[in-house]
Image 1 (cartoon, rainbow, N blue to C red):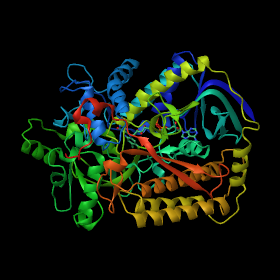
Image 2 (image 1 turned 60 degrees about the vertical axis):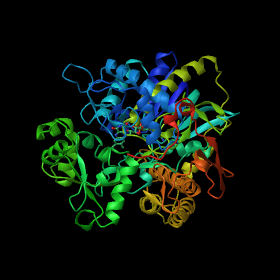
Image 3 (image 1 turned 120 degrees about the horizontal axis):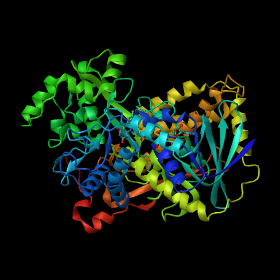
Image 4 (image 1 turned 180 degrees about the horizontal axis):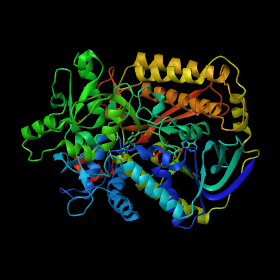
Length: 606
Ligand SMILES: Cc1cc2nc3c(=O)[nH]c(=O)nc-3n(C[C@H](O)[C@H](O)[C@H](O)COP(=O)(O)OP(=O)(O)OC[C@H]3O[C@@H](n4cnc5c(N)ncnc54)[C@H](O)[C@@H]3O)c2cc1C
């Protein structure tokens, strides 16, 4: 076993991890990044539509309006101090990315071009505003490449294809992490003064998802097993427009450019559900509307999908109806949405310039995660107690700036704003901190668990178990929820956990490039997240944002303007028999509402 010492170790090389690594190293810390994927394969690279910042390049805009939209879009569960930081620091972060060389699309006079996105409005909900800065429909790809180049320039050390499988907490502080090198199967100890988890989301809990295969919630599961709670897991976003059956994302940018949703009867149904803002309402609202249409028999050809139409004829007809002078051509669509056209032509044989795209909601984004404060420091309870040396940023973290539902473009902002803050905080922390002692035999427990998986000769195959989990989570803990169905999904997930612990079957028992073992280990993480998501969802007896219950269909601000913290009561990190603590004492920060009436919770209308 090898032991490495770095002042700062960042686990994850997506936008959040790279931004943090860049800043920590610029501020003088010795930094390593550990990533199970080659960095530029991180999911951030697939982000399409844009990064929100109130630059006001095309229309008047302000960070306060951006913060308002974030709070309202989050159905008032967002911590308002965090939403304020997000909106204010977005501007500077985007300009900084531009200065690093990110090739944003431009306006005719050379400034960063901006497009509309769901839920982004001017003047406190008055009308849609162009706030999303974009590089065609490859914004995330450009961010990732730009940040990776900067990290290389800064001489950050990269450990690529190293899977982090444990975090070391000793004497009340985090002192490092353990990773397995995919190429050799060897375990490595990373002894660090500051460790940041930036491992992304866990869309792979559900069967229809926009998320890459690698998004298995490793960071969240690992910290959870070591006693750190997870916050607001019941809020998982279903993006309205995934390619039918495949889940591959069709960016909201399509609707930003004028695309509309059409049901089987040829109606633009969002006019009914959000008369003012229509197809640009926030994602939870649109996903639910699509399901209502399907339930009412208005799916296309009686099936469970609707159309997203960006053909110039349709778009121009609605633009004219709305009294807008703007018109689009087939060439505009080709230029602004090249990757989307490519996906549809390749995977569906559908040409979006000429015909509408069949879509359905797809599991997309974890609003919940490892609880942190606005400096990316991990907190372990409702009193905001910081766990020294432990940080989290990006999708795996819950700051919480997105509340119960994230607005489009706000994840990329979250990565760069809170990644940067975390990087700076870590650099400051390591200057004053000693190394802290590693626990005795630091890799002992996780090594035994990996050995157990490697030598499993039961009957349950990970691939089949994963498919069952994904199906029951889609059915019971998806866009619409109610007690009985959620409980059934939870029971099934628990049975799968039992099988995972006692009846797993693995074919490959070798050490080198053993993806069999690592994929089985990832399934363990997914099951952990499926179970805790279902428990958190059953516990919250109201509907808010992405959590929509048919048996409690009202938002209940009196009882539920609080975050959910779930933690485990198990004897060992890998035990499956145990109970969970649910704590709902963590209040939502209302600091903007204290000064401005408009930030007080109101029923959301669009
Ligand atoms: C298709 C798609 C389109 C999107 N479009 C947009 C958009 O236009 N605008 C927007 O704001 N948001 C968008 N999002 C959301 C946004 O892209 C993600 O939330 C965000 O990129 C997550 O970034 P991250 O840095 O947290 O993690 P990721 O980019 O997911 O990276 C995770 C990193 O963690 C590493 N990792 C994971 N587990 C381990 C482990 N066990 N050991 C070591 N390393 C590990 C991986 O190797 C990877 O480097 C989109 C998401 C998807 C899926």
